[in-house]
Image (cartoon, rainbow, N blue to C red):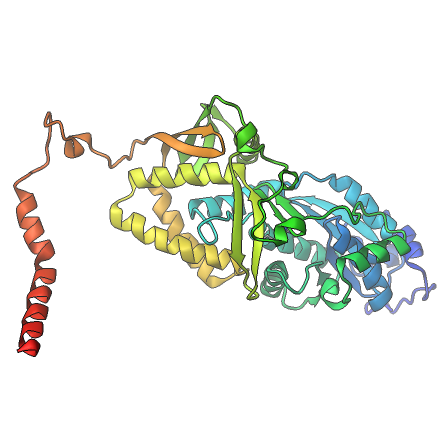
Length: 450
Ligand code: ARG
């Protein structure tokens, strides 16, 4: 019953398909209070509305049907486009076929690049020094988009399809809690106790149109920033990843025998052009994924420490991310003073952990962002990268803010401006504490022996 006008739906036990028919054509704001007063045909479902982060994969497909049966709720499927190459319109159609009352695809790629990837790049964010956090930084954005949509549609709960053993459940739920603490959270995959084979059986039994078969041995997650692969043969950490685990990169062995060079132009820490062509961030990352992937750049094979206490083996393909982080770090080395650079590297470590651990929407993240942003003031210039046989090697760099001074560093003598006489006094002062400590230690040792 509607709290505003005390209108009671005529069909109290209406089936979901009926609800779908009724709501199918409603605009996004169709749940506004009293909408049905104006148009009595648009009936309001009494069922709880749950907005599900829908990927189109097995878990979330099963989740639509399972949640409807278990919670007797209305499921709204929301797919957020963060650059995964799947056919998301097809996913949207399938969600409706499975029984979602509505389904949406939200294109968040631009926001992903500007608000998520770029801050991570400025921080050279690499978890455990290797993984560019391609899945980890997409989760808070998916959560944000889901929450926004859920609220606009009058949903009172949100749901995700993550298992109990991964990091993503934490990232989603901590984001939900931070953004909309009033929303209820469902995690059906954690609750239903089915293993993967049982899920496939469930999908088959209920004729759910999802493209997963028992042959799909890998668990894959993709975003513009990279592709993550686990399970199947990768569960054995001793086994070399089979070639069929990779999709974005060629094997370095089969990569071209001649290198490609790419000149990446940065302005205040952000890449703005490739080989002299200015382009928006999305195009730049897509282009670089292709260029570097062609040379087998960005393959990562790692044993990773999950937040939930488990060690896992994961393989990543992040051609653009690895190329850009290499280039960006190198440019920073050219323009930053030693103490700022070294201090920032320590902060990067904390920042990467924070992103990995799902604390995107936290006060600490905001404060670190402010610090990192300030460090980028002079990170402007061009980096020349050689893409060859699996490596993105920086082979040249220049900047109007370069602190590199050839006249100071030169060994050839000509034009040398370094004051050689100062070195002696510097070393005297620099080494003095160690010298004093050593003299005292020796004296003590001598005294004790005697
Ligand atoms: N281990 C990575 C992380 O926690 C990726 C997780 C998703 N991986 C996957 N293959 N489904 O960020």
